Amino acid sequence: MTDLPTNSTFFAGSRLLLVQDPEKGIEFNVLVQYPTTEAAHPVAFGPYVMEVSPDAPVAAGLHPLVLVSHGSGGSHLLYRTVTLHLARHGYIVAMVEHYGNNRNDNHLESSEENLILRPRHLKLAADAVCADPEFGGHVDAANIAVIGHSMGGFAALALAGGTARTREAKRIETIADPRVGALVLLAPAAGWFYQGLEKVTAPMLVLTAGHDPYTPPAGIRQVLEGVGDPSKVIHRTIANAGHFSFLSPFPPTLTRPDFLPSTDPPGFDREKLHAELPGVILSFLEKAMEGILSNK
Image (cartoon, rainbow, N blue to C red; front, side, top):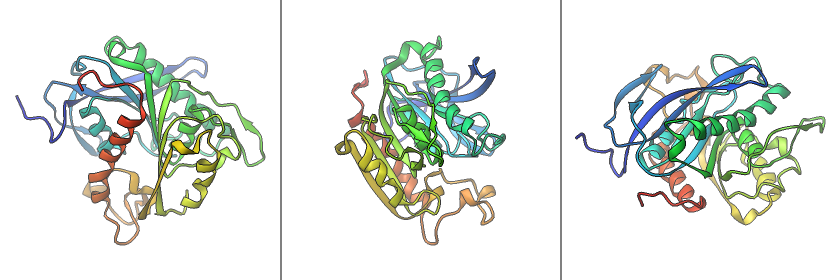
């Protein structure tokens, strides 16, 4: 049998789900990465190559579920350094491609409908994974975490009970999910939640970037000060990082100055960050989530 990845318990399985939103009459993709004992191999997902075992059986036991919410106009494939690491360590990871606000279809960008749909579709993704014949028996449904980058941070906070408002102070009727037990926010778009986070009580890891013109570190104060229990918040600013530094390093063909998501402030080492970031997130989740993996 092929050796497991260094310091890993499992290989990473991979399967694509098509999730329906019957109320809205739309559907969206959710790529699920999960623990398996079946050896992985390089698989291309568009321009990205990941070591996975497609459609392999899920490893025995119950595994916490992690939802991943990408930034506005982004892709669910852009956090693969983190998602693969979590899958190899016993987590089922559902990577949501947000309808109408992704790299291929961005017609809902900056709309109120997008604010409503983002947390709604995270919940539907969680429901779909829990109800799936292959995954359902292996999901520890009481242990759900959300990782959100930029607008994904907005979606995570809304799903955890945050009350969002427009610039005109109109309340956005978003959906909350009481199953959310932990949050990881990467350069989050938190400005929608002015005095609206008192119901958010889940432990959270908040990572901001030192040189971020989109979601500057100073703006996170309302998250740190406005949540139900500030003592549950761990906040760290990554010196010299940029807003896009939290995205996994791009292949050489996509790394160029005119493609902003691939760029960082001068002198910043994204490769080094992503050698450390997956372990930091895993360590936080293991401490924050109530469940204990059956294999530990």
